[in-house]
Image (tube, rainbow, N blue to C red):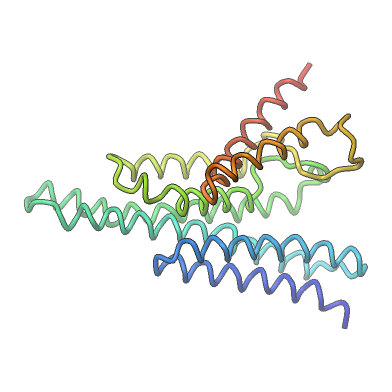
Length: 244
């Protein structure tokens, strides 16, 4: 019986991702965010339960990657797609008639589909992670849960403020391509794994955690986007600092 517990938890991650996608496509961005967070919690506990119970298996590893693609790849892509469709639909409805307007309308209608490039890069990231033995105590490239949390937080926390910013669609698509690159990049990024709880050797991790609390108090849900951006910057800075 116990061998099925980790896989059952992984399936809860997958179900959370499916719910997030549906919420996103219906414009329920906040519900999608919480579904992604729930998926991240299940993703944490499925691996922990497998180690505690000693029931790790190749099937569990493959199922975990499949669930992660849905929750941390397709779900945030669906949120961005839905948001861009909403923004672009507003502009299309208020556009004057004419050939140029038709061309622009065509572009506006189909540009949001580029959001799913991020889902493809998330799948590639997870496939690389499964084969990469260098990521025991850290990450090479941006982890998919961090990327998903960034986009979900950006859309929920900052979406209403940036939705009608001029040229916001290409700006968001460029940002999406940047985050897609970071997913498969060779940039070392620290993980919040502690061998000891002391300050020495964990300076970057404690500094990062200490900076998260005031951001959450000030910005609320939107803070997660800032926190993930700070995580990326801090990882890059410390990587360069550690180089001889």
